[in-house]
Image 1 (cartoon, rainbow, N blue to C red):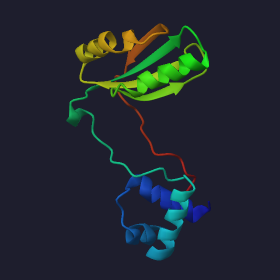
Image 2 (tube, helix red, strand yellow):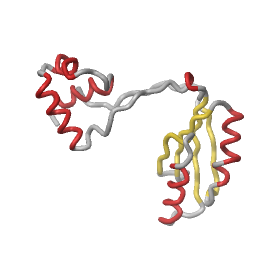
Image 3 (cartoon, rainbow, N blue to C red):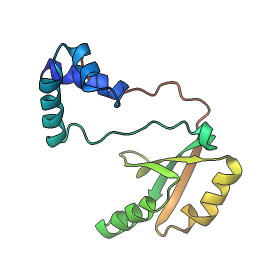
Image 4 (cartoon, one colour):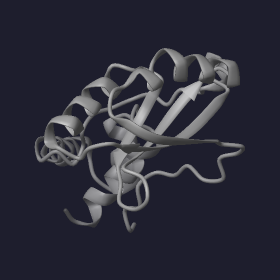
Length: 151
């Protein structure tokens, strides 16, 4: 990856719908070589896909909750089963195995506190193997940025 590839990625991070002509104009390439570079980055796994950013508030998902979870066991089977259960819960939009006091950090989106209580009762508290959890409601997001590309 060279500086031009990073510039292309920067343009696409800001607007994945940008046309090849638009991307090329920003980075100083015509459409054809620009397309070739994009295809190579897709094939190499640098570009994993193209998505749309959704506004959670507009969808009625007003609260984000960070949930720290500690498991009873760290066996491969327990970790695998826990991951499978999390994958089946749509409100869990991110799950990270972390170092430190807790085993997992989850990012959960819900309508409100009542909806979070429902999620706890109906889904999270029913997961076998959870020893302890702690929840923190996000009051305000101060930064949400694209990946740093050094351009």
